[in-house]
Amino acid sequence: MTTQRGGMAGQAAAEYVLILGGVALLLIAAFIALQTNLTTVLQLAALPADAVAIVPMTPLGSTFSDISNGMINRIMDFYRKNNRWPRSWGDFAYTDIGLDPADWRDSHDGIIYKPVGNRVAISPANGYTFVVQDINGNKITMPSSYNWSFVYNMQTGTWHHKSFDGPRLNIATLQVIPPK
Image (spheres, rainbow, N blue to C red):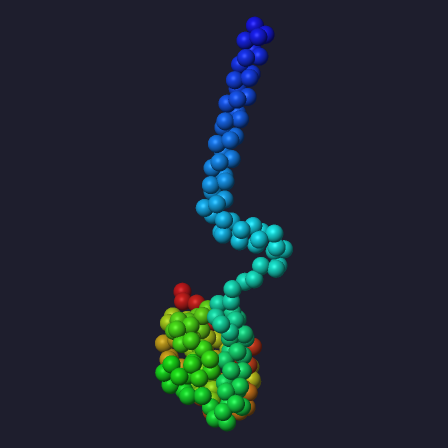
């Protein structure tokens, strides 16, 4: 009985070696087939969690502050370089300041951004509503159905409701309310 048991143990060991060899061959084939992706994944996995870059929503960033300040800075840079404001119409409104118009055809977090020569205009995307306070603390509600904008005046560095003559806004209070 002992000899039969030993023979079976030897046979089982050989089967395990064959199975492990087959698995190893499959893994090697998978590594070869997925080498680029696997290498990238392993490199990212080896980085600390805070070192993995987050892709911004737009070329100017992801937040209202990043995006609006980015447009303002590009317009001001254009003005300083050319001693005139960039064009305010069509694709030129974007390309004059080094932006791709395709990146701005859609809204970003409910905000439509548009450089317009000597100002930046923001308006709520379809169904969204802006709520903001003016500098006197009065609440201004602007749904997208009004087809109005808040505008940034390059000369004064201030945000206004509808036009430069409109109430001056405390843009830090801006809330973007999504559709219900």
